[in-house]
Length: 332
Image 1: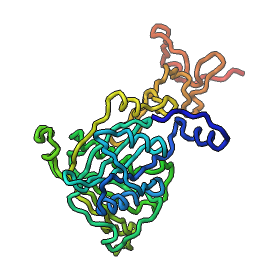
Image 2: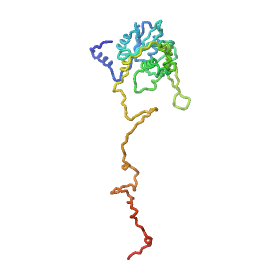
Image 3: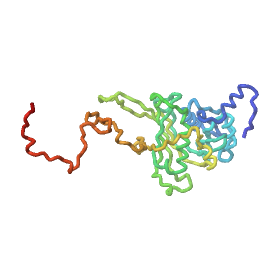
Image 4: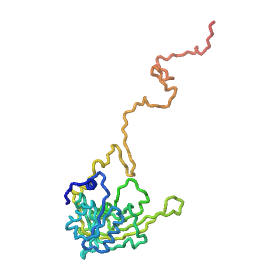
């Protein structure tokens, strides 16, 4: 581990402040490091992979006597020296030919890593379009239930998403979504089928497509979408795996309180994504309820309604005789 040096000038102080922990971290940078024996195939594969990571990548040109699974201190040093938490290490030997090692660190300490041995490889230059635009955000598609069930393949999925994530944006132009990276693996996802040896695990197929839109033949405004493979095309075999330490992984996954979503009371979300809220209403007085204004519903000063007469009991009712129907004479 590197010792902390007190800054001597304003430039070094700004650089030191830029590396301090933040609520929203900077975009993760990646390094490409060559081993003592690195074939031309591995070098081309590394260049093709990091083409979709540009411009957040730094390439090392010299060879390094490093064995990550035996001693990862050199990669930790490179990670802290260049402020990069992702490392792509390439090597080739008689025992493990054409191997790529994905390395991820937290607080400049090794978090997890795994090996991918290349079985087949077709470079970008062998396809029709051999240029990759810089600054694009590729979309991902993982095909196979094993990526959600097996712990090793979960690590592969998490590492690839972290490697090609790029800058976190709140808004994105649809023109920037031009590439689709598809990672597929066979298997039914049953962990009990596979033994502890990684040689029995299924291969990982890595494909990259470009999304193209054409004018639809119908009258609809929705364009016709087609996918064209642009490379690289690589088939991997999973090799050695270094799983993350549970305590270190817990620290890496911790979310600051300032960024944690505040829980809203009495608000739920159903399976369709709609928000459902519960509103508590107090006891209502129906006498004060505003209704349609009618003359018969107006109140008098004594509190009675207009048009209403007091009810009389049956014993107080006057009986009218038949004589009342006869006309009376007027008095002079």
